[in-house]
View 1 (cartoon, rainbow, N blue to C red):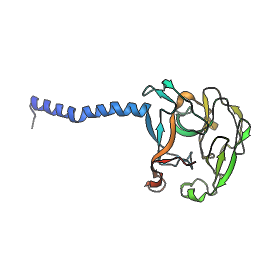
View 2: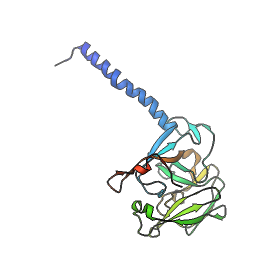
View 3: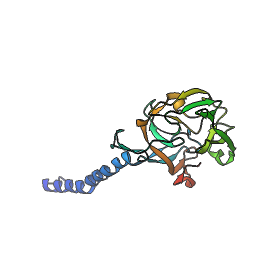
View 4: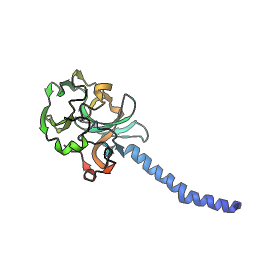
Length: 235
């Protein structure tokens, strides 16, 4: 049945009023909010184990360091900079992909690796072994993994070693340039990070991550990990 012009106009107005206009309004609010204030990031790989797991949805605080013009990397205002041991989201200088890594070195820091031991400004981090058993279900990359608590003067966090994987365990001392940051994954032998593509510019850093919103175990039929819902990163 063919609609009259008046009926077609009423249908069009109804469609605009009930569907298109609300979607436009919602997009006008949600998209700038996600771009400049807070967002979330699905984690597809295990490069940040045991802190972050594959299938985690992490909350990204985009106001942690600055305020940017929505949909750009241009800063309107800045009130702080990333600190050592912060977990941040940034655009990779290698291919522009959005990554989650830990800040290992800030501008001016001297970074070195010796047989997997991190040295910062000439001081070696200390490593305290912790039991692997609580994490064993999530570690499938190596049959003999080890987990240690890496400590500096200011903070500590867990790092994963995979002795049967070929990772970069030695790195000559280098100084992090001004306006740049040295990033590494907590799974030290399974992370594509600043050891490969170099330092990350301050302008490429999107925000700070510190909490898991929800998590699905992609290696076990995407079963929900209820214990990680709204959980802060383990330290």
